[in-house]
Image 1 (cartoon, rainbow, N blue to C red):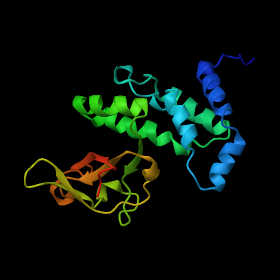
Image 2: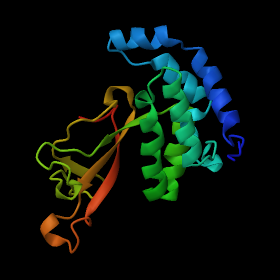
Image 3: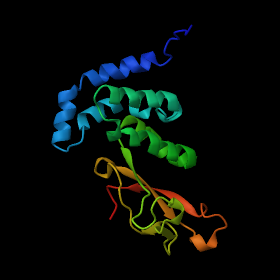
Image 4: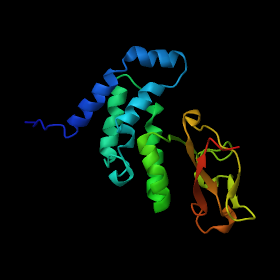
Length: 197
């Protein structure tokens, strides 16, 4: 006989559903028809802390895990919204959390958590490399002064770039011919889209 177990995420589900109820199907259909972006909806999710779910509390986030973040996305979709408009804020942030220095985490994560900065985009895919990311041709070379990198290359399919302040960019800092494993020699850069040329 199956046992009914309570949903351990019911509080999250209820809270996200309540927020989503403020943005009924008509709102999302209108945005979709206009080929627009659900700015008000994303702002409400940000202000409620849902897009900072996986950011640790010491950086201003909720400190929740992947399961809880998945529940948030599931409830957005269940309500008639589209989590594709905002899920980048969660998974892009985790790249910074995993690979960023402590100084970078302290600089970026609180502003991403508060919504001051939006990190929705990741520049990875290139037109000539297909699905093999290890063959990327975009390079990043230190400038002569050594205080910055000069990036050359081409990226395609960068989702939500027009709705982001920052983008995570993958570039090769060591040529493929000079690495032992083809997954080595690649670096992640935070690109301020407001200043990018």
